[in-house]
Structures are given as structure tokens and as C-alpha cells.
Amino acid sequence: MNNRQNAAQYLGLLVIALLVSTVPMRAQFNYTTNNNTLTLTQYTGSGGAVVIPNTVGALPVTAVGSAAFYQVSALTSVTFGTNVTTIAPNAIFQCPSLASVSIPAGVTNIGMGPMIDCLSLTAIGVDPANKYYTNSNGALFNEALNQLIEFPGGVGGTYGIPASVTNIGQAFIGNSLTAIGTSPSSIEYTNVGGVLFDKSKTYLISYPGAAAGSYAVPTNTTTIVSAAFEYSTGITNVSIGTNVNSIGTFAFYDCPNLAAISVNPANAYFSGTNGVLFDKNKLTLIQYPIAIGGNYIVPGTVAAIGAGAFGDAFGLTSVIIPNSVTNIAQQAFYGCLDLSAVSLGEGIESIGASAFFYCESLTGMVFPARLTSLGQYAFGGCQNLSSACFSGNEPIDGGSVFYFDPALGSILYVNGTAGWGATYDGISTASCSTCGGGGAPPLGILLSGTNVLVGWSTSFSGYILQSTTNLVPPVVWRTVSTAPVIINSIYAVTNPIAGSKMFYRLSQ
Image 1: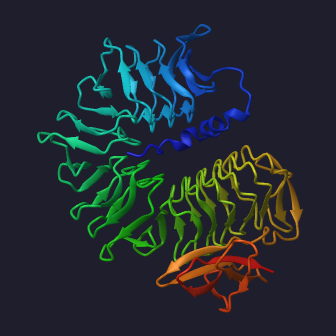
Image 2: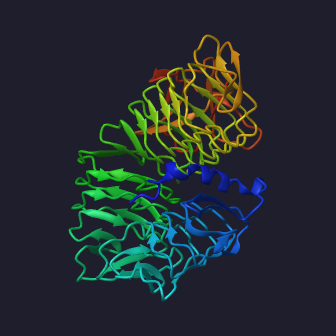
Image 3: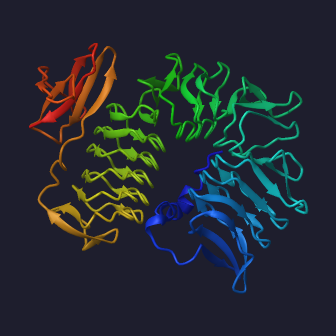
């Protein structure tokens, strides 16, 4: 159900497409060749009305690959060439100006979610001569009308799923609806208050993306499927009851106004703390509500940060990860544009693909000695990353780890560590005596009952915590009298929540 299941196959294309405005291209399309046919792998033009050619040279263009059109902001329409037979999953992804798509008669294979999160798309056209696919009220179906393949993301209001539909795949990811309706005669689906469920109401399948406000998951629901709320712009709070025992990947990914996920304390599988979603024992951080922003201390119980957990949290400015964390999964901090400081705990062993992709405010990273692997594009597109120092042996290079990081001139590693050569990830290396603290320490904050916990990594010593209630000059900073204590590799200071705003800083 999740539109990122194929991410490992096309992450390279995503990186290039994101940065296309800064990289000169010679042609509008890139292709691969297979059995004397061409697959369009990447559109490199500036947008507008795009017509995919029938042939290039003597070879027919028969397929459009995943993420071939990725975040092309000025793309307004796509007309597929008459030789195209295959349109891959996620072929057109987050193109906000795309208004129309025309599918020719020869297309015989369309993957799930072919036009994900295109919020201006109001109709998907299909040639009447096509024997495999059709459209109805602007939505894309198979010819038998039992598979809803894509619902156009720019259509608002209420949409009723025909009774004949038995499979919706990823059709509603990135929708603009206020309600999803179903037919009473449907054998597969029903809705509760405009939210789509299976007939038994145990599986929450899709939330209407423009439905505003808070939402309480019904008590009989056991499963929130992958991507169920993904890209929902209206949701602000979600309450999870006692019976939910399964939450799919990216279920709450990139909901820009989501400020809190709460969980009934009696739930045996999940928990919520200060609006953040965890498994029951707080071993895995599943989802950070991205509307929170600011700085954050990951709790010391956490061993893993889940896939996409902080993805697109544009307002997140710093994060402290304690020694308890061993794994940071793929896309965990993907697209956190304001994230300028990350303190990695000493326990981290692996960082997944695109974990910090396009975190353009990051300037320096210190990697702990236990780190053994870095996934593909883990720090790709971090254009201001100018320093990277490794405290331990050379980790496995997943490929293009630091792709398009122009400020990173060299990589440092500590004297006496093993495996290092003249280059790593294609970047020259140099030895050093110690990685040090990597500049000023990131300061994190975490609510704890009626108190606020302010902390920084124990990798940084000699700092004192100061506070003020007013940032208007002249600012008067006062040293916080409470002495810090060490909690799970973090210097922590606990202060009662006062009636006025409080600002904190570290000083030497």
C-alpha cells in the first residue's frame, strides 16, 4: 500500500530530479534501453505541456519508469506517446501544477499510484480505444471497473467509490477530498464519517486529505494501513484507541498540520508521549508530528528511529539522539530543511537510505565509532554540509552517501581506525586526532509532565545553560541554577513550566 516500497529502485533519480535546476541538462528526457525499446527514466525539462515522443531514433518509447516526473513544479500536462505500453508506479510524483494526463490506446500495464500527490490534477484522460483502462468521473480505472487505480489529487468535496470496486491500491494518497463515500452494496468497503474502511471496519484504509481538524480512530479498528493519512493537509490531531495493533509504514507521513498523535494508555501495542507516536515500550519512534517544529530530544528508551519518522518536518531545527539508538531507518529525516544540528549517540550502527536527504541546513556531522553502514544517499543533497568526521572504522558505503554536497571538500577519520583509504564515497579523506564536538552543541527540549527537560549531548562538556524570557535587545541571559544530570548520554536540566515563554541557550 505504500508508495515508497519501490524507493530503493529510484532514489538516484529522485536526487537528480530535485536538483535539476542547478545541473545543466542536454535533453528533456533520459532513457534506458531494453530489447531495442526505450524506458523514459527521467524528465529533465522545465515543465509546461509535455508530450512523450513515440520514438527516439529508430527505437520506440514503450515505458515510463518510477519517478520519471518527480517534483516538476511547472509541469502542467503529460501526453504519453502512442508506443507506451507500461506506466510504472509513482511515474508522476508530486507535480503540483499538473492539470491533465492523457493515456493512449496502447497502454496495457499501469502500476499502483501512477500520479501520486498531484494537487492540481482534476481529470485523467484515457483513449476510448484502450482495451485495458478507462476513466469515470475523471478517475482512472481498469476496464472492468473493479480496480480504482488513481483518483485525481485536485478534485475536492466528496467522492463515492462505485460498488464494483474491489481494489483501490494507492489511489487516494495525496487526495484533496473532504469525504470518501462508499456504496452500501460494496462487498469490500465502507466509510465512517467519510473515512474509508474495509467492510468489517477493522482496517482504516484512507483518510480524506482535506478533512480538517482532529480525528479519533474508531474503537473496533485494529489496523491503520500504510500511507492511510499520508499527505493529508487538514488533519491536526489523531487519537488512537485500545484495539489498534498494527500501523503500516508512512501511515502519518508528511501531514503538514499534524501536531499530535495520542494513544489510549490501555493500548498494548503503541504509546504516545507529547504527541509523538512510539511502540508500546518506546523502543521505536514511529512518527514525529511534523507541525511541532523546534528542537527535540529522542527519549533514552528508543533503539530505532522508524522509516520517515521525521520526514518533511520543515520546522525541526535540532535533534539529539541518545546512545540507546542503534538504527536510523530510511528517510527518517528526509527533507528536514531547517534541521541545522544533529547529535548522533554513540550507539548508532546503521543509517538508512536517504535518512538525512536534502537537509540543506546541516553544516557538520560527527559519526560515532560503532557506525558500520551508511545507506544510499543518506546525506545526499545536504548542500551546506562542510564537515564530516568519523570516529570509528570505515563504514559500508551504500553508494552516493554524500551525493551533491558541494561544500564537503574532504572527509576526516580518527587516527588508528581501520579500513580507510584515500577516498570514501568518492571524496578525499584525511586523518585527525579526534572528531571533537563538531562545533556548538545542539540543544534539545522535551516535555516531562509539568516540567520541561532541556538537554545536550555529553560529547560536549564545559557548557552552562542560560535562559531568558525576552529576546528583544538588550537581552539579559541568566544562568539556570539547576545543575545538569546525565541521562542516557545527555546532560539534562529539568525546569518547571512557567507562565511565560522561556528561551534557552548554551554558553561557555
